[in-house]
Image (cartoon, rainbow, N blue to C red; front, side, top):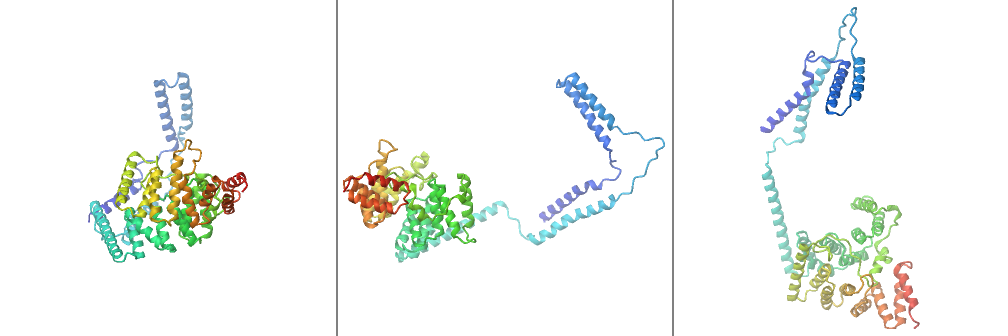
Length: 493
């Protein structure tokens, strides 16, 4: 009832305000002639002149000249008195009365139309809900959702406990834990699912998305590997291609990002749900980088990696160029984290290290510890952690690669000049030889094993390995040109 009382009162007040000018009587205020308005303005100007003189803003001569001009205009605006013979004329008939009635009728229709619209689209019977009650209802719904999620997780835990090899249960439980924020617990489950189903596009995609989400959108080495593996299963996978374009942007390579996204845009149906996002990203990156998008030829990520200058630099012994990241436990780099945040990260890492001391057989845990040490700028400790993972999984080429890169980063950190590459430690060559044995076409391994052969004087083997590497590169890439120089410098076999 209170709502209707207020609504009617507001409607009446609004109508009265609109109708007030029309309700005045005809003689209440006689219309003024144009000349009278002009004279009133000129009188105000004369008064303003006097005030300016009193304040000292105008001199006597200036004030007199202005006063003469205003008085001249007053004379021109003064009405001419009627002649004695003139007779007053009756005002012409007016239709103001009919017009006023029509306008008043329209004003009366406004609240009626509003009432009709409210009865159609409104909820007259809906009881009022105070703000505090709405907040309480929202909190109750959130508690119910949390309880349902916890119940689902408990049921999936029970399923997995009774069937530890259930791939679907691992995937569902890992995804549910990730969505609830339990990233540390979700990571090993999703990693196990990915290893158990290396050819499943759905499982690999879920794992890649988790790795990206866990680092607030940053594409780290592990996520990069999974995304490339996905393209090996399905070269047209849109999600993997988008994320690899995002990785290029994080590597401060907007041209590479545009090339990958334009390629994805060209291959996607016009009604694909990701097309709007791709177009928006292309426009934003092109604007910020000052690039005309049409000037960048589309390239598939796998094709672009073949002549990737930054990847080539990473394979010559220099540590990969870090992407700009936000300060957070999963993605921040050393030196970019505020002191308080860094202390919290170090406490988490120390807790993980303590757990691994009690559970040394957790290979995934050692891999996570290695990545955490890299985040904190501790490459030597990272190399040690990766080494423990390699000892547990001697066939894991990715773990060996990460250990080799950590060793290189540690050596570079001890170099006298940060601008000059440090010599690779002997353990790097051993690891790269193992990688080459398992992946004969691995470019990073081809380079380092060839480098070791050249340093030992085995020119024939170095020439063979580097020639194979050059054949897999863009002939005009920086790495290919550098390798040709190294080949020319080799002594004859």
